[in-house]
Length: 276
Image 1: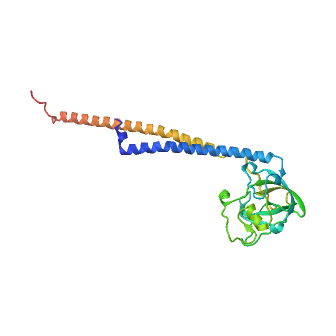
Image 2: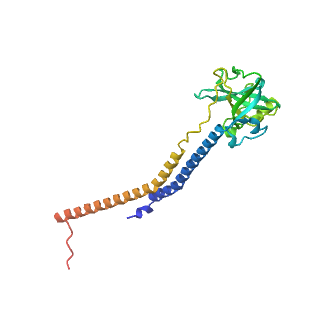
């Protein structure tokens, strides 16, 4: 009755099921690990945001790569904004997903080094080749507080670093690139400005990172594992249905044969039994 399992159709179906099981198990663990990383990242962000601000020079220096453990750490810096070295970062969105630019202004410290300060978002001008009207930063010496971020690269951000951009416009916030342009040492990474608040509505401050939501990765993991369990269950159901259909077909064929024999006997066409 189960010889049909050796047919080409059923061999292919079984092999596909066997291949799907480890694949879906792996996909489930992939989503589970993404869930774990998200939970870990949320904990790091919360810890960084809750930590007491420290001088930025305690966290970074020229050429320093900001480690993940210091992402979002609140830091303070005292110096003078260099508007001559100010640039805008293209293709950035605000909280309402409107496309504009970020304003990146160097803050020159007392020792001559600078730290890049992302002062926030402003709308992009209609003419993409024109430099937008950027609100001026505070004059004189000022103390700012910001969230420390790592230098952006194409690999880490997915943003292509385009060449030939209009003057004072860039694609990536990168301390090494800005150090070369400014002709002075620049601390690694940059600060997302938190305070002091601007006198006007722009630049719009960049919102705090989300550290409450965990996404749907765990639900996806469970879903993949349920699919995994469904493969053998579904295979057994299909086999049982095939066996049932074959038995019903065989019984129906037997009934039809018996009925035909009975009709033949009633009409006298049935073969006579052999004489001894």
